[in-house]
Image 1 (cartoon, rainbow, N blue to C red):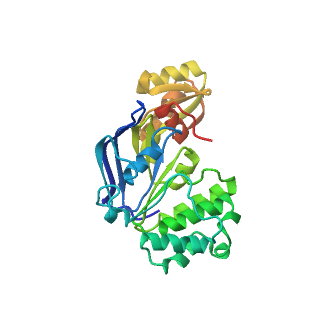
Image 2 (tube, one colour):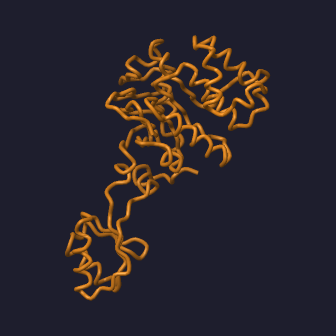
Image 3 (spheres, rainbow, N blue to C red):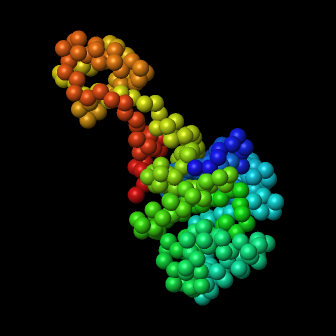
Length: 305
């Protein structure tokens, strides 16, 4: 991953978008994205991810709240010069080659045409650069979109659901590409509804549900504290010992085992208490809550596709 610093490239405060038909797309959203990180903006479809990204890019105006993106107001020319983005599906001229499409975009954006070759190389499209866009697979079209977003050598790369519509191999290729793009000082803000995708790529995550940010932090912070997984017989006696040791509120039964919230350094003492009470312990190990469990607890949704 990249070299994360204390510099905020995205800072949103109370960002809100209400539409005239009564739809509340985003409500009082605070967001912080640091230089050098791959930040996963995670939420179910319809949670407000794309609306948020559109506001950060200045494509739509917020109803209230504010944002600073790479040191500028969203949509300002100075800010956009330092941002590359794909929001929803990238569109290109179907009858032109990938390289010629990038030439046109470089001219429109003021980017140096000498960047085209390195951008195509970075997304592994050099061998097909002279082929027409209409002959590209979905994965190649997405990679050309990323190449276009890289033309300005952006400090911040914003990618909205970049693996949508891709087959499993295409998704894996895009994940690998994004991990590479996030190295160094470059910052990547990626929206997704797929837990596995975010878990494999991102250093930090913000979870959005019904337009509100419900959690933000590292993967470990989102999952929550590590617990002990205890399998022991007889179960009733094991539960009594565990509850007496750590409190009933810190013991839950799940799939024939107990999850115990306790400092890991107390594991050995807990094991001794169980054995002394005549309980046969077959398993005793640290257990992290999965990202899917955390996601479902936060949003009530399953972990994507």
